[in-house]
Image (cartoon, rainbow, N blue to C red; front, side, top):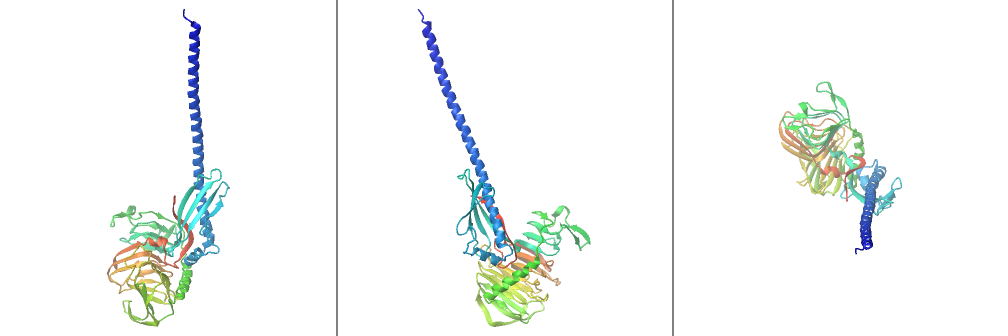
Length: 453
């Protein structure tokens, strides 16, 4: 006889097993879901903390910019370098990491600073940030910071500027006046004025403009403004150069390379790591030096320091080359507008070395002039600055072949090189991080580039 009660018991047992198995599976799944949800919450919380840590690290960089603006504002380059050499106390973050709370008290940052070397203003700042809630979620960014200098501009003018067709300008261009640009600009062009009176036609023009239709130079086969144009932009103060002259004079006096007036001025002949200096007695009708005499005592084959200055209190003729790694500034300064000129007739070069930080600055109270009797193919490798005059060559009615300026030009009055068939003005990228010593600076540290590490 079939036992129905036994069968019911077996069914009940089977159901219970199924229920238990189902409950176990559900429990496992539920536990897994809860674990996953918790892990996702923790991960999201961690990622939020990481994101906040980046903001804290960035705040550390901003604090250091503020700190440097207060410590170095108004200083000349050599004074800024002296600031970094202080040891009592050291600048923040140099001898040991500097830590501080984030403004709202939610986190903290640690700053480690590598000071400048080799006469540059460039520093490296590493900023590590974290939050108090999750201090293990750290972020670190590394930034290069530098002082902005006038040598950052391939052309910097205190007046209206006119760039002719055929001029290929590689570097930033700025004028305190208006700019007519008919060549090709590879970098940004800026002007301090929104509009100006263009004397060529008597019309009012935009701060920056070109005579080419659609801003395309058909002769050179290129857009005129390859990196754009901005106006109005901040104005540059040429009167501030006076402080640089004092710095150059003091530095030259320390190494016995400052000179009182001679009949016409001095000739400076650069010879690699050496220098000759002569008094100029006479010049040719072409403007070149024709007669000299020794200084007293004579300066011949004088060893150049790695970082140095030469100061002449009148006119100066400069030629020659300097060796790798030399950082030199040469200045001609006199309160009279008829003196304080620098004249160039022969090549001035870096001896074919453009990667070792070699830099030369030529600073004139009045003009930097390419003379009539200059070489037909002339190359000038330097940052050129004319405080009250201009960087130029007069119209002598002759024809020279080619001029290359590899460096930078800062000119109070409109610049131009008359008589040369072709002209190349090429920016020396070393000048971004390595301006000539005692060269005018804007005295403000800026972040040049940064990346997370």
